[in-house]
Length: 172
Image (cartoon, rainbow, N blue to C red; front, side, top):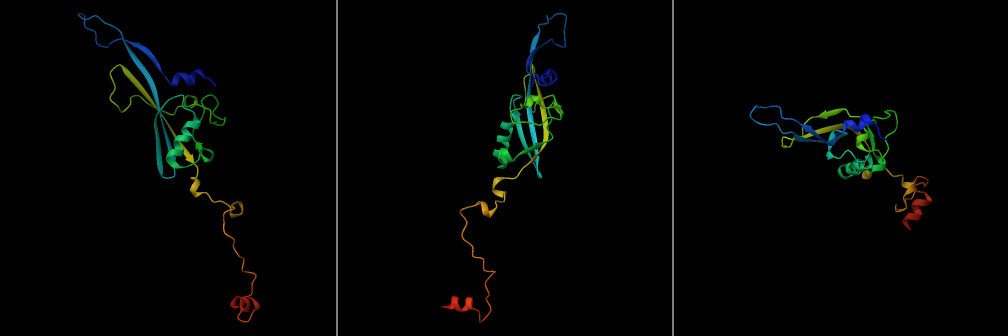
């Protein structure tokens, strides 16, 4: 599942950097810049947006579904994540064991909102997708499949006219 173009999109390495301002009296000493990536997943579910922030590139789709379950009460087996494509084969089906670094990147942001030291670059990658699913408490269960329901008497077959036998038997 390793694809070099996908791996290059999620940097996590240390790169040498030379200062941009050099004066003849000061010697130039190279500093190191640490580049890391953070992933933000934004699920649109009905009218609300659910943000999963600061996810690692090695986070699996199953772990994302578990985080969504905590926020929405939709079980992972009932979740469908629409709009996420793999970079290796966009037409293949997204499985629970895929990791976020396997996804095709649609949006990149260069800096995080936090105040960072000068020598740290953070790339924030954002994946927007649609979450389809119903919380467990809103799912209709066929009464024939439940055992704990009370007995219901079907009284449509009885004749309850004034002089009928059923009315006389019920009065006794």
